[in-house]
Length: 442
Image (cartoon, rainbow, N blue to C red):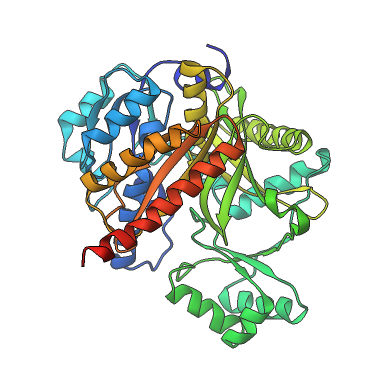
């Protein structure tokens, strides 16, 4: 099979292992306390529900959190999967590697399946070699910036934001204050972070209201927005201006087993502040010129990653400036939320015909905490209403519905952006309406 699907799984059904927590844990900053670590693991286990869609067709699915079979049956029905063997609730409170070490039969079932095994990302528990070395190098936003700066001169339409690497946090605080005094907004980054953690946009007024750079950094650590220790990067803020509708972009690709780069596609991300919320992918979501610029640069990045031994999925994230140039901000050497959207679009195109747009919404707020069965009933009521708009509703993250701030992760697939907008508004209103329903029962 040609293309990225062939490079990813050989076009075969695969084993999907939701090891998001394991991947993230290898980049936890020094000084993170046990309570914060536990919260990060729990959040990662919710996100690992995306493992259902790590490839177009799972045969065996291993999830850290407990899920109801109704959820996987829903996805199997809509995506025309065959029989899926599901193991859930495997790693509550710990990493997947720790859990599988205590379940040798399941570990052997994965190893002996004879199927491709796909994970969120590589860790030392899986292998230790040039692939993992490349992950650990270029997941750093400092190393990624160096690569971007080296490649950019050959790529018109790409502009690399200036980045400083102050020696120590006191120096970082002083430089941050000096930049604010010049009226400059700064992006403060920990070298490693996921989903927006460790990346903060600091405006001058915010810094001075906090009492200066040092006071602001301490406050951000207390709020668990920055790690308590380690290097900080100070990066030029790129102002999108009137191009804000296309502010945050991504381009995904796969480095195949032979080192060939296979483009997947471009997406428009939804980002609140610096926190990733979801993405829209499919035909025409990006203007042709921007898509071409992102494609050429992301492929060049992939060729460099391949030369250093990396194999697998990666993406390059961008922001746009006022001249509609693309500013690369980070490389993710793993699966991502947008990867799931691309997988869904490919599967739906294969089983229903081409042309699907897919929008993922990773954390839609719910108006009330729900038991899993109640969440299923709520979404089942929405399913035909979305279908009347020409949109397929796919539940992706069902396990966070009983958190103190309950959310659900969804995908919407339809023929155009207008249909997706209408379905998203419908679902958001229904989710919000849950609060009124439960208030009426008091």
